[in-house]
Image (cartoon, rainbow, N blue to C red; front, side, top):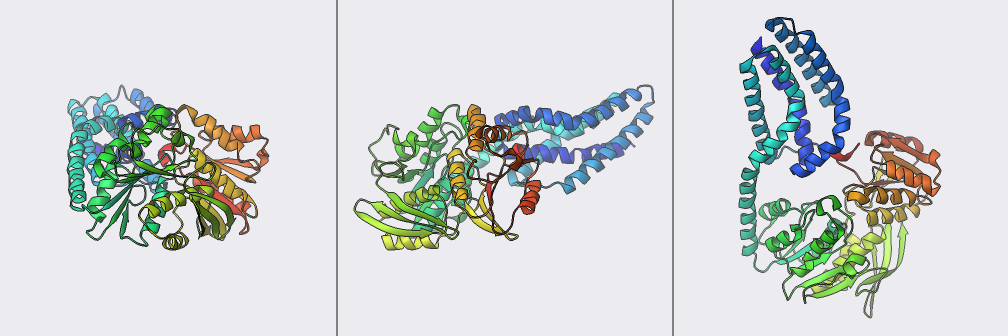
Length: 523
């Protein structure tokens, strides 16, 4: 019976262990971020754990006078019931971003399993009736705490593994001595700009871009090791940062000769600590370029425009609302995309694209500046802009089940959200926005989301907020702006939001999907 109980409590730990690893992964395998997430969500977790905790405690005290064998039978039944409930619930669960079973996660599973087994063996060896209850409680609550020793144990291994991969990537880059390397960073806009730049440069050069949001050291390393071939002539590398020193590290790693900064804003304030740190770190993209390098800067961004660059590298600017080397005018929208005129000195060139929004015009201008520096003709650039595909989840027009969606679901930011609302305002029919709000904005998060809610008035007819707790500030902003609150609905899950969308819209309406938070932040 003892062995049966041991097997059952191992099974009971599978689902909590998976959940703990899932949240650790979504918090980028960083204990500091994971701890902050635990602190922020402990109230809800405590509520969910209250019933099983009370049951375990009540039954434990009721068994105080029973023999050890009877306690074992009770514990086995409860552990078995708990295991069945957890597994059945997990089979029905859906996730925005499921746990990815990478090699790293597999190593973490092994270490967590060993730690769990050692603790359970110790409790089993001691074998007193309350040790049985401790074993059961550990199966339910323990995995969340085991993340800490597991992370500390695996950290040296992960560091050695990562260093080996990075050194191999550096060797590959060194072998491509004629490769044109372009770095792109920004608080927002960098992924779209990278895709646009890749589309334009591919018209003339065999170009490799970092896929999706592979903008971390290991994402870039993986791109170089798995995708870079001798035929590639241009490498467009997106570089992300959420800590001081991240861009400096990546610049020393990749060593691009061309760099672009698309934007600087209050993104990742909670990890950077201040806006000054964000600005200084993003501008390392320009300051770390070689003396014969070339920098491209967004003149519409106040923090970029006013930053005193500490290098003599050549730079050009682009913008729509401030004086710049590359600008655009006569921007018009339709359900098919945009048309606009690019102005550079005395040159005026007409463009059309399937992309939407002023932000995408800015992104295109950035790519054009790099293309012209590489002596790509205007005709070739026009063709690249016209033929490029819409960027996934970034103001992407999609027709789903007869409804027109503007999918701007990737990592929303204040500037991008404002421009997305401007695009929605120009669309025909009923205008609906579905959003869970914005995160990682530090102590400015509530005020920014409140302003976001207020800005919806006159641009959206229906508002669907996902997650009652995280959208409180948006709701308040809507109310203070005078928005008709009869047309504001709050739901708990994305699925409920889509069910409602299909109830209140027709094929003539437009639905904006603004941001798509991972499960760790959807509440």
